[in-house]
Image (tube, rainbow, N blue to C red; front, side):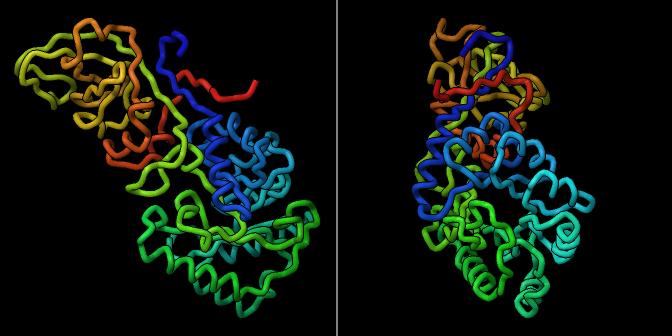
Length: 382
């Protein structure tokens, strides 16, 4: 890591591409897309998404219109899907930027039909709620569309999708229940013919409407869940897709910060706001220049750890805005000094480990990593 006054976040794009190839191979012959929403889970979509495109990814999933508009010039010719749907008033921007809205309600369907009557055919997707009870067409909506397929007239349907609620737990009965509902809906719908005639309107360019159920964890539930297109996100960025199993994916991020100061402490002394940690004897504190403003969760106080020269050092006291304190009294004198780098995420401690200690999930750790880090991208071919 080059010398810097700030903490550093290293993002291994080579590892992301290796994860993409592993996932694509696992679901073949289905297609593998990529969820690049939330700035590629906080890691930098402008840097990462074009490399995924060059690696063969043609289907990208974002949450919002702004995300799609930002990525469009970086991904010429790629399909960019808006999973949060079609916000009122966004229709012209969505059509003009060749974004594919995932329509989540009858109102959105009707508004997109009206838009395409005036601007010409533009592809769209449908999302059906099969049990997550978040976004998507309801069970009653599905029955209505099955009974009256003319309600879809004029739509150039590119994709039908749903989203599993318990995919990280392979034994959860909700997985099979949602799979069954998704099959029932997609097998019963009488869909209008594809209106678009560009390449990639389904595998082989045959104009078939794609079905998508699998995201990261559901890829590992087996071929029944793969359908035509999977849309991994967290797994691309190194998060373990299946609870309680060895992670098959490469780690992507390394987060390092510097020791600012060492301080000797003694019996009954305390550290940090609220005096939440009291020492039971002599020790040494290292103060490190990161805090909750950088995405280091306050819940890691007195629970989490960093690694100093490969040795675990517990976080003691509360996490504050710009600083954390760790106990290094068990390490040899002289092996720790101001200016040394410590690993908050790295070879000895994964994103998932930090998430466990913080009482959250890896997704939240990555998407909260702050803007003050010096960002470095590695693993790129010259």
